[in-house]
Length: 307
Image 1 (cartoon, rainbow, N blue to C red):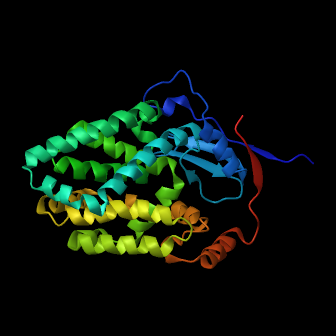
Image 2 (cartoon, rainbow, N blue to C red; image 1 turned 120 degrees about the vertical axis):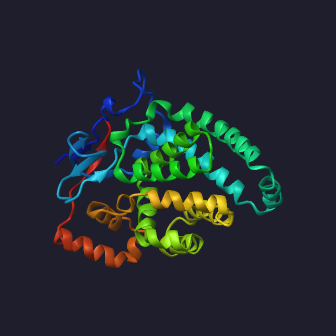
Image 3 (cartoon, one colour; image 1 turned 90 degrees about the vertical axis):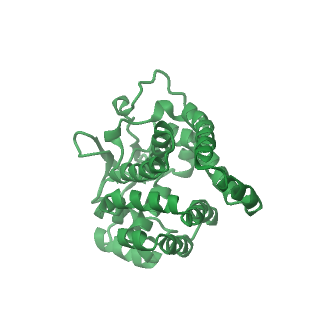
């Protein structure tokens, strides 16, 4: 019998903010094929307005849809921006540059804002050269990605940064969460592990708790731990300054916390990540829970076909 194949449906062009004429297939497509040779069988794809918000894929014998759309070209475009972002986070975390940061912090606030706006302009100019044609219309992002976008935007705007730059930076992080399950599940799990009240009452202590949980729960990629904890450590230092602390608390207060946490579908998919202890549960516990959901029946798998 011929091996069954699952066809990844093509993404509907109507979801994009700007229409595109050409979609050149890049190397990341083939890398994705190599990394994920088989997957559960897709039965249906839905997007707004058929669902309240976002895009979802439904699979055979799986009770919950998966958020987002596995478009290899978007993943490829984001890959370069994620690398640049990680490099920048590493730069800010470089202890040898602490004297320079101290001098920067002594500048009048208006000067600091001008410097930061110039910095963001350079970063966004390159990012948008890769992503401009891949941005969705707002209603096609999942609830979590949109709410994280709001939180970041509130924070940056309260610091008096340029409105367009603040909105654009927040949108890029929204894209990261929408198109990278590895990041989204982990970040959602961290929001799921603390309360809004904790962050408002003791933000630095709570952020340090989050950094500790990342190290405890990540079992496979220590480099990913560093990429997530670096911005958290930077934020902890910034929150020692009253202006940043007030802006952070205001953003947290305005956030809809339920939208930042797991829903039942997110909890299901978090259990499937073998090397990340979502909700503090080890692999054996999560695997037992999955078997109970599926009543020990295997999930049908098929070879991926992008044609």
